[in-house]
Length: 172
Ligand SMILES: [Zn+2]
Image 1 (cartoon, rainbow, N blue to C red):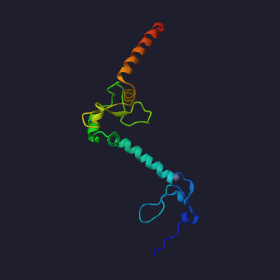
Image 2: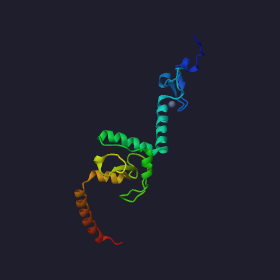
Image 3: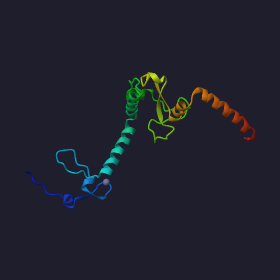
Image 4: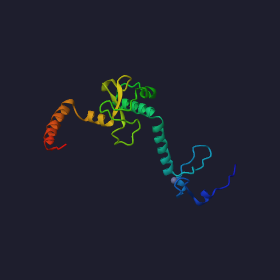
């Protein structure tokens, strides 16, 4: 049997993480997946953080791939057809929301980013297929999904009434 020199880490049953520099019990360190069976130099929390950072980088580097894979899972959830791919999505990409004419971003800042681009289906039941999708702002998508055209025209009527009233007192 091969004898390897025992490391300081094993003697102490603690090790210092190369990421956060905290001294932690060995149980906090993931084991390498190779045959060595050695512990990784980064603790579980740091490993998670770096995985998250890699995912974020992936999002930045290939946002269309990510959009395509999200649309695929959404199509499975909604049980609608799917035939999109990253190349097609990139070919239809336009950084302006066709509804509001505002700039949109293919990479979202966070879930509340109103200027993030989202895929809109012209005819929802036809699914995520070529020719049936376009990018619109999350703002437009959220508004679209929350009101009916009837509600919207009533709302516009109401807002116009209000606008006319406030115009009376406006000086500009
Ligand atoms: Zn750490």
